[in-house]
Image 1 (cartoon, helix red, strand yellow):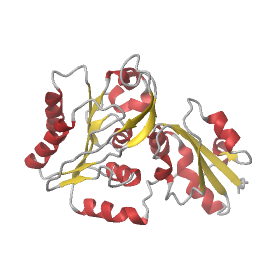
Image 2 (cartoon, one colour):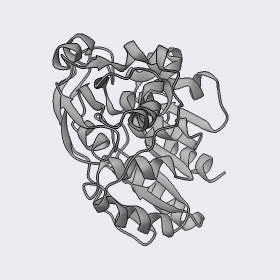
Image 3 (tube, one colour):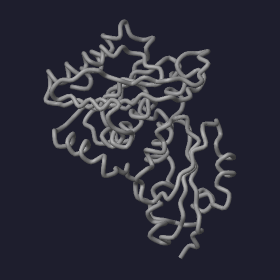
Image 4 (tube, helix red, strand yellow):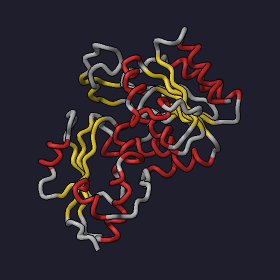
Length: 290
């Protein structure tokens, strides 16, 4: 049996999209925590986060294989800071090659307070998961309301909308060249209700939102952490992106593999490519319903 250390840490960071991409797809370490706990239940597992998203701790809150979490704030390369914070712990990257553990795709774990919302929406039938926001949204909310109405009126699909007002740090050049980035308040609120619309803006949490996205029938929204979840699950998706994301979404395979590979179930449009935002949303609805 492999000699598992008494204390192990994992480092994660960046935006929530980076975190969930590594958690569900790119880093195998997250899928062996259950195996480690079965081999040695007393192992103390700590997650060290250097994220600019304030919801990271909520995402990991009910993971039964994480014993503690340290949030250090965002830095571009959080590894040195994480090593210092996790003094006395062994990095899972250091021991993983020798363990030969059994990998199991990790879950997005829900807590008791999450189940009423989750179960109610799941019981209502198939749904389009919609995230009309990002740290710099590029489409007016009224265009998303138009999309909600079209989807519900023209199909038997429900619509789930998520978002949460929060303060965060935006990286430079993310929206347009020369964008300075920095600390900003991101307002995410949809004041609209109708039958078959589940409006969860500022009424739920990132765990429920991620899990509902993971199990949705279709995805539509701004380029954010949620389209990453939809892409990982192979969900038919239409994404609206600012010009500042063009280089990342056309060159960085780890972040944009469905677009780079021209997979037919995934479409993306940049805001400098459409004649009007309403036209772009109508094209998205037609793709989603096709």
